[in-house]
Image 1 (cartoon, one colour):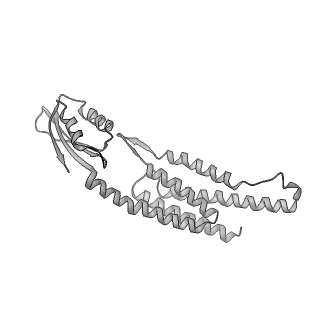
Image 2 (cartoon, rainbow, N blue to C red):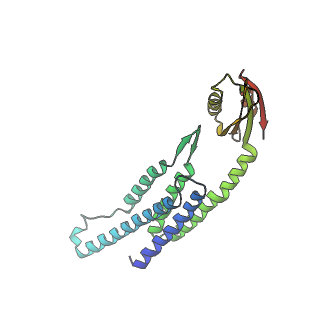
Image 3 (cartoon, rainbow, N blue to C red):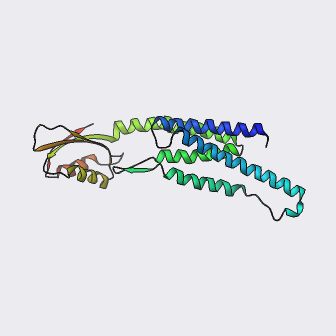
Length: 232
């Protein structure tokens, strides 16, 4: 390969990985600008090494035909190893916290960036650029649509006043939400003027098909609940 071609592919990998990583960085995700850029460039470098290995192998066979049956260069094997290795890297960004899983999008973008880096390294520029445009639309455009949809239709604030003697109320309520496949996005302890009462606010995401009324009735069935207010 000529040096200009190598430089162009690596620079393009830096631009593509940096573009996707910048979006993750702005959202304060575990893997951001530097991580995505390095993953994309690393995958690109592996592709370049593999291409160079094939070129050198073919050249060596041309010079020594007797080695044709003893030497081979498998392009697919190296690509598969990169994708598998990046999968472990992405798994490190996934966090389980308060009944919900975080970091799946970041883990996915790391894997996709590695795939794009391989495409750039192998010289498939159209695939790399078109897929980068599509990824940008998904993680920026569609993500905004998803956030707005959740906030308007599927998220709910519940103000709950309960007896102060029930010290495990918040923990047991969070478990109830988790058992009913409801995500707890936030828990706030609010000030109460009555020493016999405690006041808390749950921000939950109930999903598109979940029966919210049935869930509220389960909460009201708790004898320690004094009052429950639903805030849309």
